[in-house]
Length: 203
Image 1 (cartoon, rainbow, N blue to C red):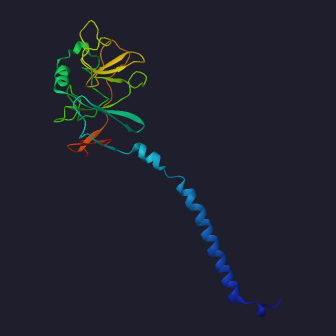
Image 2: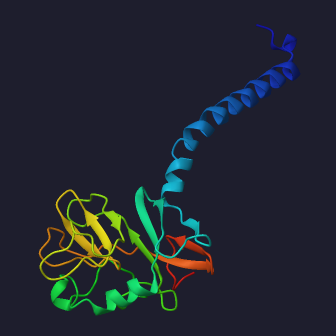
Image 3: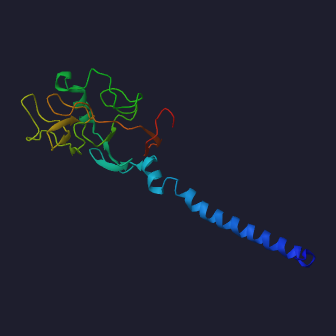
């Protein structure tokens, strides 16, 4: 074959064009493949902090929001509720003397909430026995929840197996639940906005 008749310019152009088109095709296939490894928007949202406006939450009222697939109860307690919590004897409660592992270090006291915002209670609404959702029962003196040791002063009741918690989420003695309800990490963005999922110490 006589190579003098070969158009080298055309050959170089075709080779270059084929290479470019092939590269675009590889990139086009790689982008969706790599994108499929990234977490979905739903997965990102499941672990993201949740902002809750509590400005319209009345005393005695409750809001339920979802955080990481769990229900979170936000309750505005009344002055009477806080006083009743203080008056509970340690003999009535199970998980009082031990270190409460189900709350952040910056949460303390019988109110189990942030200093200066004792009226606002934030709890994960899952019973520590088998993970059922306790019912909010703020009604004082409920006959079906009172026992021989005294009247019901309001709190949370798990109807599945009878576990009872006070309005701080502390578990009563003599029920199946072994520990207090969990206090999730939370902080205040403003006086009326709570952020669930961010520690107060790092906010």
